[in-house]
Image (cartoon, rainbow, N blue to C red; front, side, top):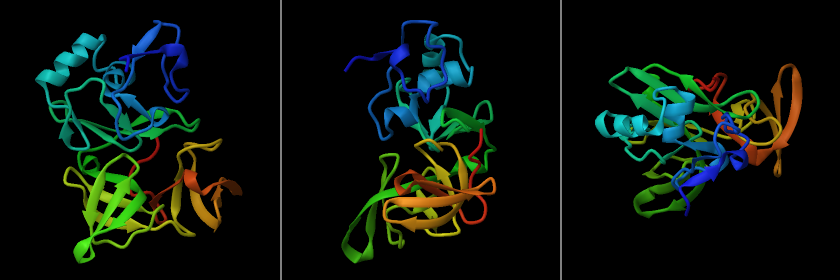
Length: 228
């Protein structure tokens, strides 16, 4: 696979200058889809402004600790996706990848305490021995736990060990975040589920969307900072 991508053909969710150069770094294949993630090098250079050129980014990654979800990453092409946490302990800076009000990739600066938490959506599950279950998560990770959770629910995890702190069920009354569709980046209170359709309440109105676009982020309030 080529390690570059034409800027003009890059996902619409990327906030980049598409006419500055012809090509941009293509992320290494990982757990996130291309439209919901960006390569770490582009994030550090273009989004967080921690370097001016990619060679500087590579030096930082090789010489200083840059953590994604609590694990050190040296690959400038590593794909960082929705709700992933980037930590720079040396600078005491912590960021979470979110979506802005237009559904584009943005970053929310968070404190060190929140950098230890992450929300992950359950996309699949497999029963194991001794009552354990393997949960497949939206970011490609798999964890084994004995929690009771269904596909579509969210897990509040403690990083870096991915310990389950809380299960957030997909049900009426829960706080949800929209990850795709016309309302990507929006959030509200879930009001109803019917088949593959859903309704949520935001800005004093009920809005229809797809059940697949919902990401449970809390009960009355979000467990993490989801705005840019």
